[in-house]
Length: 112
Length: 114
Image (cartoon, rainbow over all chains, first blue to last red; front, side, top):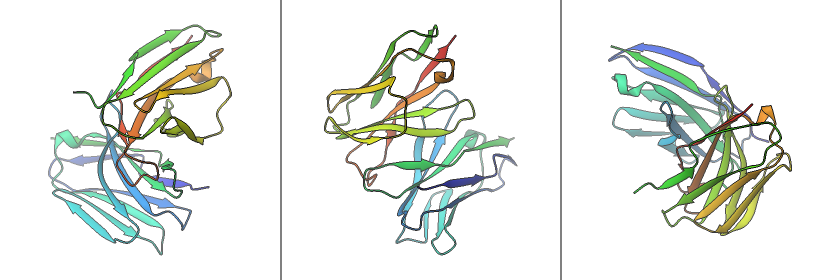
């Protein structure tokens, strides 16, 4: 089955700096890669996703890149703000039933 | 206006008890999921239903039994609760299976087994 590894497990950045989180996946058939943000005491929320036919996608301060050959994808957050502090999860989907395999999460702390 | 709601938000119970968690979505989605998040924040899918039919059934003890009375509701019943069942349980929904649409998560139910 699919295995997703996520690094780093924690990330501290100064406000205004950039944050990068990296994930690798094992199943070359995976075709959909969402990123979720989970704030304390809340459920995960989708912030951006990318499909296997696209190499990069951007939404304001957030961007995701995908390298299918290397089987890795990354989340980039620019101009970080304190409200970006949360746990971020990458995920990969292989099958047609919606089963997402999640990474272990990255705790991002943005200090003013 | 809550899209995916769960009850209860907190559940504290003794080992050996039976408990249920309820989930409702008002998004008109066809597919619903149950996830378990352990103390290390690891998220793992347990079950998925599409139009009341079970489509994903991960390796979960048979003490866990999902039930979908209609496509807007997915409940989770847990028999003979064990200490290791303590976790946060999230319900989610999407327009259709296959994950082509966003999965929307509920706020979670924090289960503590004593």
